Image (tube, rainbow, N blue to C red; front, side, top):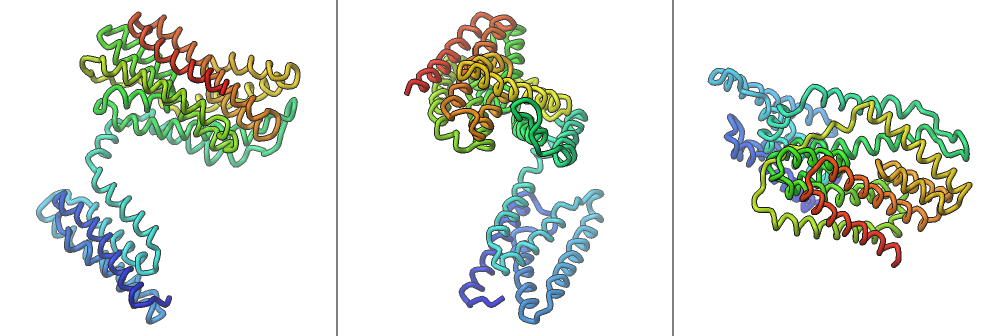
Length: 413
């Protein structure tokens, strides 16, 4: 690998800077035997080892340098063990990563080196938060994550990738891929919700709860408002935002399945999102004080839920195809109206897929998705009125009406 002097200095400077970044974090946290000076030297050692190995044509030089850093890390840990019963391995592992980052910088792998250094620094910095999160995770949550791995890496690859059933509308592997998409999206939001709940208040809980499940969030906070009517207005903010962020979820799903459909869907989604956001902000400004409201959201990656969604998605896909075949455009809209009452994901994904295969026109798919969202709002408003309080229902009705009117107006543009 031939480098000019300028390129060589640039790569060495990058190695030193990335090492300094990691060392700064260790110094700030009271690193026991390596900090602001040691880490840049370790990353520089990695770059120098890579240079010597490149010049001599013997890349064992890099391995020898890594072994040397490993010996230093082990020695430092043993010395710390004399003073502390549990010295920890975090700093030692970080030293090895710093060496590798330096070697990557020399070999002109700037982007991977920066990414590794920043991720490692973030892990080091958020140590207290990660420990707190580990205490929040329950056994059923871990079990559900393992089930998500089963859904993604075991079941998906073995399913046949061909069409079956009436109208050739059922593809087992594609249906299960949608299960993986929804479970993965919901699981990511669920993890973030676990990290921030109880510290960031109603608005953020509403946004994240909507990404996990807007219906489940609505029902949970409807019950909370019933138990404590003083929470009605804050609960309304959560419920409105949960349905507002549903439009973000819809856009992500369509972007994955049929990106071309976004040309027709972006305006309704944006208008409905902004309408819900405006009403939520209005309600939030009128809220006298915020109270902690820990959400009760079920882990979305459980296998039973995944199978149930897969079956629902298959039924909706078949129903939309049949509706289009026998009744034309009106049949598609009726199916969207009915299925959207309880679930928007299935109808969104099915319409996006059918628009991508040419079964539906893009405008038909867009209209059907908006109808499904509006139907879902009506169902959730009825649920809030039944299980919640009258003030919660009034504020929720205002927010949902704004979202629905924005959606209907966008269809006329």
